Length: 371
Image (cartoon, rainbow, N blue to C red; front, side, top):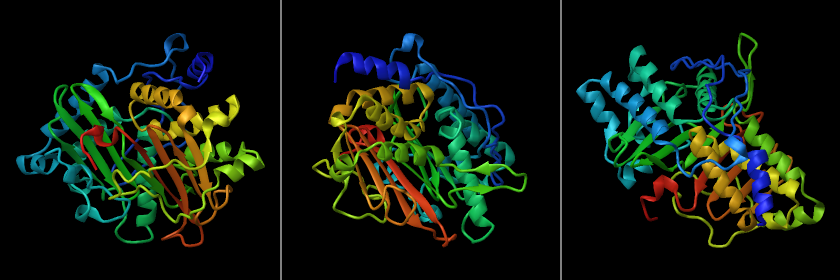
């Protein structure tokens, strides 16, 4: 890719740096409320340059401080549930299903006191992005969606989520923040004070949108949907024909228990064949997933993916309307792997819901395991 194109994208798209959390956002575990209309957060790098390659030691130390503060609220038995070895078995113990502790490790949020829940929330907030509709705000809305499901069906609710530290939180050594429940898996890996991996990140939602009793509207995956839709809508008929996959998909390919199973051959349409504007749309489509991490890390990762656009492919199956069972879109590069799929509803059977997954070919779980 010519250097001037990379510089232009860095200036126009990679506007990320530390900023205050969007005003008006709040999280109350057990009964989650999120102001979905919180002001957007603007993030920028000085002189339009790319961000550093890793999160600053200050950002990581904030996560460590929050983790230590949370641990200090727990008794010995609770700490034993939270502090686990960073093994492959523990790291890969996540799911998109409401399967509780049978498929997850860590302490269940519903067992914590109000003080402990506040401290747990602070850890997740420190570790994730500050954008409106991404990062911590999006995580909060996913838990709120589970509370909506819990009003209709048993087994759902924001208390049914689990938090664990795999390894000992610190600015030396290797450890992972491991958090998730139904429709959510956050895995952020740290090594010697730097972020080594921001994936796997699974996120889905049912219902896709709703309005609460106060009239506030929610659509936690709207940014992901909009980005993918704009990307595929920019393609010509010939480009759509090249991007179309022969297979059909009813779920993501690389969901739970599918670690390391990336296809050997990339399929679809090469991003390097697209116009500058179309390539910008591909990069913008990635951003809501990348923004799960703290702002500095997210900017760095997106900059890496930008440099790899010529070797990245986009593809789809089903319809590009993204409104029916089996509508599926994928972005696959040297590093990035993102899938977005529409499925028939499980609880709300008259509408679809979304499953998505974000992985990295080399830095899943911080690159600590070979699959």
